[in-house]
Image (cartoon, rainbow over all chains, first blue to last red; front, side, top):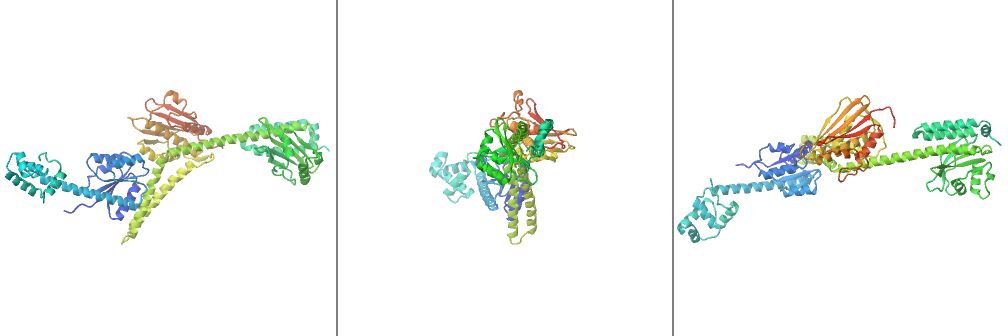
Length: 209
Length: 425
C-alpha cells in the first residue's frame, strides 16, 4: 500500500497571504491546500497521510487558537504552526502549551517556515507510524483468547511459568502451551519484545468485543 | 519749523479725530489675519498725515533688553529702520522701557552722553524723531517711532497722546492676534497629541494590518526566487508571484499613506471631500481591530450626500474616536450582539449628520452630561480627552455634537455639521 503524500493545510483569512504561502510551498514541491476560515477547514475530511496546519492567530469567526483547541478536543492531533501578525507572549504560551510546534511572526522567512513545516510533517509521520504500530499490536492482541490474555498479563510482570500456574490454578504445562501461543500470535521474538509490546498496548484487562 | 500736518492738527483737530475713528472701526471689524495689512496701511497714513518720512512699530524682545522693528513704512528713498542692535542703544531702550518718550527736533537735542544714538542718527541722516512707549496689559511692550530725514520736524505736545492712542490700537491688535495664534496653536497641538495617542492605542492592530501584505510579499518573492532557481525555471509561476507582490506592495503603501495622513501634524486645512468616503477609510483602518474584537461594523450611508468642506483629518479623528469608544463600550458588555452601526444622513442641502450606534454597556444619565468635558472618562485608563477634542473640532466647524443613551443597549453619538464651502477658515 502506497503511503498518501504529505500535505500542508493553510488557514488564513487573508487571501493573498494564502496564495503567497501556497506558492512558496509549491516551489519546494509540497502539497498545499488553503482555507479562508477555521469553519471552512473543518468541513474538510481529516487528512489520511502526514499533514500539518499553518494557522493564522487572528481570524474573524473562530480564531486560530480556538481551532487548535477544537482539534485537540476532537482527538485530531495535527501538528500546528502559528503564523501571526502580532503575537503576544500570553498568546504564544497558550498556543505552545496546547501543543503547537512553533509560533512565527509575519512576515516569516521562507527557510524558517519550510524548516518548521518539514519538522511538523516529520513529527506527524512518526506519530502516524506509531499509531499504525499500535493498531497492529491491538489487532494481534484481539486474537488472544481470554486465558492467553491472562497468561500474557502475568508473563510480562516477570513471573515464572510455575508461579503463573499457581495464580491461575492450572498446570505448568498448560501455561507453557498458552505462553507459546501468545508469543506466536503477538509475533514476539523474545520475552523482552513481548514486554515492550505490553507497554505500548497498556492494560489488557478490557475484553475485546 | 512747523510741518503742514502739525498745522493741520492745530487748525482742524477733527481731521485727526476722524482718522482715529476710521482706524478704530477697521481694527474692530477685521479678522486677525488682516491685522498686518491694517497696521502697514495705518503707518503709511500716519507718515502722510504727519508729513514725516518714516514710521515704525517696535517690539521689546522677551527679555526686554532690546527693541526691534516689526512693522515699518518709509517714503521712497528713506533708509529702513536699523536692524536690531543689541546694547548699542541702551540709553534709548532703557528710556522707552521706563515709559518715557524720546523726542528731538535735532540730534543735538539729545543729552550729551547719548553718543551712540546721536552717531547713528547723523550717519543715517535722521534730523528729528519721536518715540512713544506703548503699554499692553499694564507693561511697556511696544513703541511707535516717527522720524524725519528731509527736514527738521517739531512734535507738539498735543500730538503725543493722540499718536500714543493710535500706537496702542496697533499694539493691542498685534497682541490679541498673537494670543489667538498661541491658543490656536496649543489647540492644534492637543488635537495632534490626542490623535497620535489614539493611533498608539491602535498600534497593535495597525501592525497586524501591515504585517499581512508584507508577509504575502515576502512569501511570493521567495517563491518566485525558488521557481527561478530550480532546474527548469517556471516563469509562469514567477510572473504570477510578481503580480501578487505588486498588488500587496500597493496595499501596504495605501495603508501607510492613510496612517501618515492621520499621524501628520497639520495646520487646520479646509478641503472639499466626500464624508462617506472619509468614514469608510477610518473603518478600513480599524477593520483588523474590529475583527479581533469580533465586532461587526455596519455602514448605512446616504448616497447623495452633499460634498463636505472642512478639515478632513480632524473630522476623521472624530470618527476614529467614536469607533474606539464604541469598541471599549462593547468590550465591557457581554451576552448581546457586538455591533456598531454608522449612518450618514443629509439633513438639508447644507447639513450632514453622522451617527454611530454601539451595542455596548451604555452610559448613565449623569455621565452623559459630562462625556464631552475635558478629563472626564468612564474608562479606567481613559485620558478623557477624546470626546472633548472631538467637540472642539466640531465646534470649529460650526457643528454640534451630542450623545443619546439606549438603556441597556448602548449609546449613540452624533454630530451634525454644515457643509458650507463658502466660508474660509
